[in-house]
Length: 179
Image (cartoon, rainbow, N blue to C red; front, side):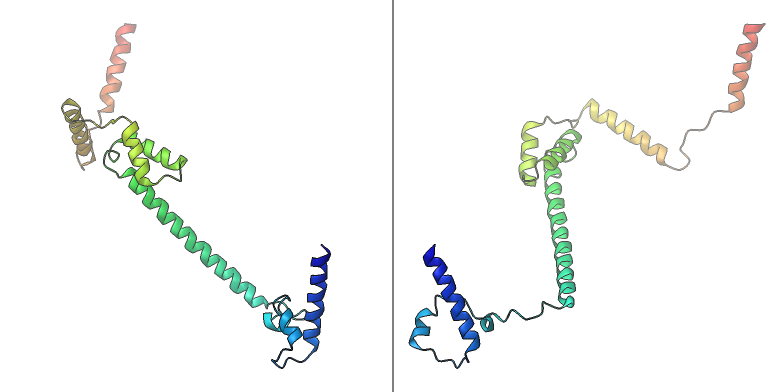
């Protein structure tokens, strides 16, 4: 401890003496031997004790740089995550299968360190396929799809029932019970 305290006092004394003495570029033998042990002079660092802090404009520049870096980092993160989710959900064996797609999305959200390829491989290996393979299921699906497409066409909507016929039927039914 005493040695380090002594070295600190010596370095401070030498630094103060260097600031007071003119710097002509030539060093004496005593100064050359202590040059490696002393801290850099204020002239060398470009900062002295009585210098004013940086101007306010530099703070605004700093804030603008931070905001730009934040925006760029956010955009890069969004892009990377979008690519990861697209890879996970668009892989063969996952895309088009609602159960597997839901499992892939859930796993990707809960395990952000997993790559999209790892997520899709895990889902394909561990989640049963729910996609119809053909036959009766495919035919029933095709009929439902065509029926829905037919309803979407202009003029193909079912005609509304005549409201007066319903009321007449109800009134006749009530009259039969009464009479």
